[in-house]
Image (cartoon, rainbow, N blue to C red; front, side, top):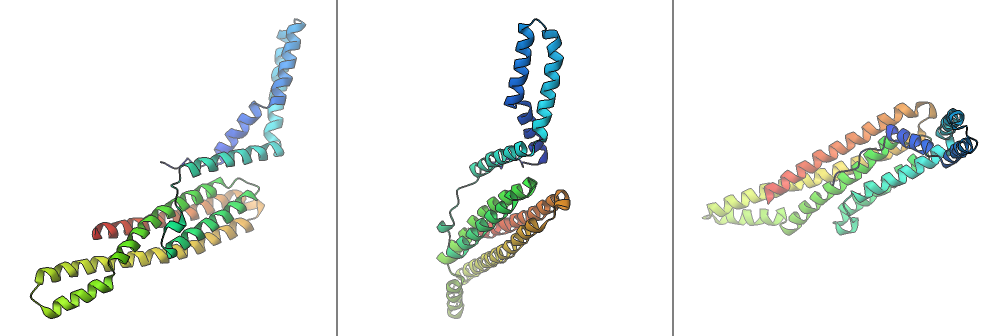
Length: 256
């Protein structure tokens, strides 16, 4: 299932416009004016008045800070539900302990960044969306890492290496020796890919901490530009995660 489109400033602005256009107080006020015009037979004169009142009321609602905060909270909640609905249910406890630990730490950082975003004056939805995508990518990558982990646990490279050394010392079985040599090379390659996964994840978790720190410390005067910059940083992390996933996929397929 594809991830929902980013909830950016343009979508937030559209939500504000819709909220202002459908403001109940403004609609009721305009309706009262129009009904009064009909009753006194002066609808043609009350129409311009109603239009002016409607535009004034919509503008008041659009620029009202409390109304904007309510819209933002509502849209954030709806967007979060769409993201979570599109995310595969991955439970850290179903993975090997070292991999599950990384998934738990990623989720902890996701919550911390989400908390930092919720306290910001601006939506920061670009950053929020990239974090959502990042965690989904990490879940997918962790699943591939788990396949490597299980394959290496089923056939430890050291056991194959010991068997290969015995066959070589005994001699007389060149085909078996070749098969074991190929198997050992594949397992070692898978081992390197798994090691790479752990190194990448540890480094990326540190960088996510940095993103949170930058969110917390950003000043109000630079928030607009900083949001785009932070989103780009998280996007770069996710792209590196994708490269790591592809590498592990290739390693597993070679060993299959």
